[in-house]
Length: 130
Image (tube, rainbow, N blue to C red; front, top):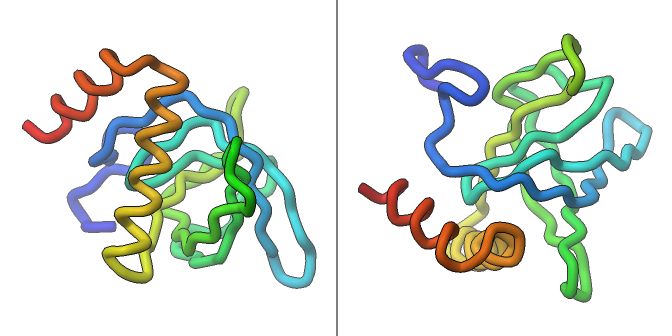
Protein backbone atom coordinates (compact mmCIF):
# COMPACT_ATOMS: atom_id res chain seq x y z
CA UNK A 1 0.00 0.00 0.00
CA UNK A 2 1.43 3.41 -0.90
CA UNK A 3 2.45 5.52 2.09
CA UNK A 4 -0.22 8.11 1.28
CA UNK A 5 -3.03 5.55 1.00
CA UNK A 6 -5.18 5.15 4.10
CA UNK A 7 -6.36 1.71 5.25
CA UNK A 8 -10.02 0.82 5.20
CA UNK A 9 -12.76 2.52 3.24
CA UNK A 10 -10.76 5.74 2.69
CA UNK A 11 -8.07 3.87 0.70
CA UNK A 12 -10.40 2.04 -1.68
CA UNK A 13 -10.01 2.50 -5.40
CA UNK A 14 -13.01 0.34 -6.39
CA UNK A 15 -16.71 0.52 -5.52
CA UNK A 16 -17.73 -2.32 -3.19
CA UNK A 17 -21.10 -4.06 -3.05
CA UNK A 18 -22.50 -5.77 0.07
CA UNK A 19 -22.12 -9.37 -1.13
CA UNK A 20 -21.53 -12.32 1.17
CA UNK A 21 -19.55 -15.24 -0.26
CA UNK A 22 -17.88 -18.18 1.44
CA UNK A 23 -14.10 -17.89 1.41
CA UNK A 24 -11.71 -20.74 2.27
CA UNK A 25 -8.04 -20.18 3.03
CA UNK A 26 -5.12 -21.72 4.87
CA UNK A 27 -3.27 -20.13 7.80
CA UNK A 28 -0.17 -22.02 8.85
CA UNK A 29 -1.39 -25.63 8.83
CA UNK A 30 -5.05 -24.88 9.54
CA UNK A 31 -7.86 -24.31 7.07
CA UNK A 32 -10.41 -21.56 7.67
CA UNK A 33 -13.84 -20.84 6.22
CA UNK A 34 -15.13 -17.30 6.65
CA UNK A 35 -17.39 -14.98 4.67
CA UNK A 36 -16.92 -11.77 2.75
CA UNK A 37 -18.85 -8.71 3.89
CA UNK A 38 -18.44 -6.90 0.59
CA UNK A 39 -16.55 -7.25 -2.66
CA UNK A 40 -15.26 -5.13 -5.51
CA UNK A 41 -13.13 -5.70 -8.58
CA UNK A 42 -10.07 -4.80 -6.53
CA UNK A 43 -10.64 -6.50 -3.20
CA UNK A 44 -12.90 -7.71 -0.43
CA UNK A 45 -13.43 -7.59 3.32
CA UNK A 46 -13.31 -10.96 5.06
CA UNK A 47 -15.14 -11.19 8.36
CA UNK A 48 -12.92 -13.03 10.85
CA UNK A 49 -11.99 -12.76 14.50
CA UNK A 50 -8.45 -13.87 13.65
CA UNK A 51 -7.16 -11.70 10.78
CA UNK A 52 -3.85 -12.47 9.13
CA UNK A 53 -0.98 -9.97 9.57
CA UNK A 54 -0.92 -6.95 7.24
CA UNK A 55 1.21 -7.70 4.18
CA UNK A 56 0.43 -11.44 4.23
CA UNK A 57 -0.21 -12.90 0.79
CA UNK A 58 -2.33 -16.03 0.67
CA UNK A 59 -4.29 -18.14 -1.77
CA UNK A 60 -8.00 -18.32 -1.12
CA UNK A 61 -11.08 -19.78 -2.75
CA UNK A 62 -14.31 -17.84 -3.21
CA UNK A 63 -17.48 -19.86 -3.61
CA UNK A 64 -19.55 -18.00 -6.21
CA UNK A 65 -23.22 -18.94 -6.78
CA UNK A 66 -23.94 -20.78 -10.04
CA UNK A 67 -20.23 -21.43 -10.64
CA UNK A 68 -19.15 -25.07 -10.77
CA UNK A 69 -15.87 -24.57 -8.89
CA UNK A 70 -14.66 -21.92 -6.44
CA UNK A 71 -12.65 -19.03 -7.87
CA UNK A 72 -9.01 -19.24 -6.69
CA UNK A 73 -7.22 -15.94 -6.14
CA UNK A 74 -4.13 -14.59 -4.48
CA UNK A 75 -4.87 -11.89 -1.94
CA UNK A 76 -2.86 -9.53 0.21
CA UNK A 77 -3.98 -8.24 3.60
CA UNK A 78 -3.85 -4.42 3.41
CA UNK A 79 -5.60 -3.63 6.70
CA UNK A 80 -7.26 -5.43 9.58
CA UNK A 81 -9.18 -4.84 12.78
CA UNK A 82 -10.15 -6.92 15.76
CA UNK A 83 -12.20 -4.07 17.22
CA UNK A 84 -15.90 -3.31 16.90
CA UNK A 85 -18.86 -5.31 15.69
CA UNK A 86 -17.20 -6.68 12.56
CA UNK A 87 -13.60 -7.74 13.02
CA UNK A 88 -11.80 -8.83 9.88
CA UNK A 89 -9.32 -7.94 7.19
CA UNK A 90 -9.30 -5.90 4.00
CA UNK A 91 -7.91 -7.89 1.09
CA UNK A 92 -6.46 -6.59 -2.16
CA UNK A 93 -6.68 -9.06 -5.04
CA UNK A 94 -3.35 -9.91 -6.67
CA UNK A 95 -4.10 -11.17 -10.17
CA UNK A 96 -1.72 -13.57 -11.90
CA UNK A 97 -2.37 -12.01 -15.32
CA UNK A 98 -4.79 -9.84 -17.30
CA UNK A 99 -6.90 -12.86 -18.23
CA UNK A 100 -7.54 -13.72 -14.57
CA UNK A 101 -8.32 -10.06 -13.84
CA UNK A 102 -10.81 -9.86 -16.72
CA UNK A 103 -12.49 -13.16 -15.76
CA UNK A 104 -12.86 -12.23 -12.10
CA UNK A 105 -13.96 -8.64 -12.78
CA UNK A 106 -16.76 -10.12 -14.94
CA UNK A 107 -17.81 -12.36 -12.04
CA UNK A 108 -17.82 -9.41 -9.61
CA UNK A 109 -19.84 -7.25 -12.01
CA UNK A 110 -22.41 -10.05 -12.40
CA UNK A 111 -22.62 -10.44 -8.59
CA UNK A 112 -23.08 -6.68 -8.20
CA UNK A 113 -25.81 -6.67 -10.85
CA UNK A 114 -27.63 -9.55 -9.13
CA UNK A 115 -27.36 -7.82 -5.74
CA UNK A 116 -27.90 -4.16 -6.65
CA UNK A 117 -29.68 -4.29 -10.01
CA UNK A 118 -28.38 -3.35 -13.42
CA UNK A 119 -29.09 0.42 -13.18
CA UNK A 120 -27.39 1.01 -9.83
CA UNK A 121 -24.43 -1.21 -10.77
CA UNK A 122 -23.96 0.68 -14.05
CA UNK A 123 -24.11 4.05 -12.25
CA UNK A 124 -21.62 2.93 -9.58
CA UNK A 125 -19.16 1.46 -12.09
CA UNK A 126 -19.43 4.47 -14.41
CA UNK A 127 -18.91 6.84 -11.46
CA UNK A 128 -15.79 4.88 -10.56
CA UNK A 129 -14.37 5.34 -14.10
CA UNK A 130 -14.78 9.13 -14.09
